[in-house]
Image 1: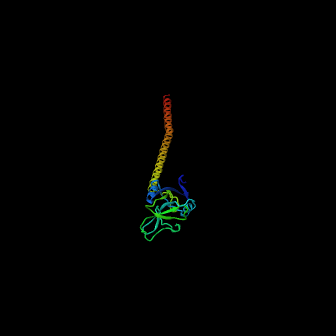
Image 2: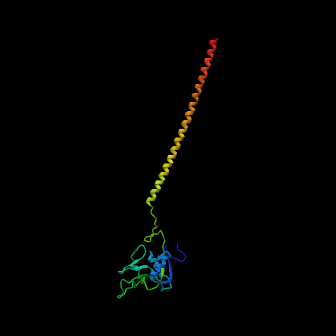
Length: 218
């Protein structure tokens, strides 16, 4: 989902700026607002958007540069070489008296049929910023799921195991105390009738003795 001042092109968000700056200045402006100079993954669809614009002639800096030696690369984290099939006819420009080490930067223009190039400075052009979408792999558009920290996982497992052991200990201790109390109560219940029997026998013996004494007196 792109913000209001961004243009959606194939699930990517681009902001066109009409402020004319050198390539380095434009790159810094994009970075300061949390973006980057445009590095479209879908070059063909990106070019089609500009090709279909009726007002032509406006050039925009993109996030591509010529390296020393003449090779062109995108400047994002992919560090990917530029696909030569997307150059507009007549580009890249190169003259016999041009130093191969001279920095040149990638551009695109309204009504153009491909990418073009320009000197990075002192040339000042419009530029295009691209919103950085976190959690998306810019190479193959795969959502990145952060890997779990094995240390954190181990700590969690240890904590869970400790809690389980503590619960088992509490359950075992409660069961032991419950059984011990039942055994004590049962022993008290069993011992009480025996005392009553002993007392009854003592009473009978005492009564028998009294009767015997009475008979002997007569």
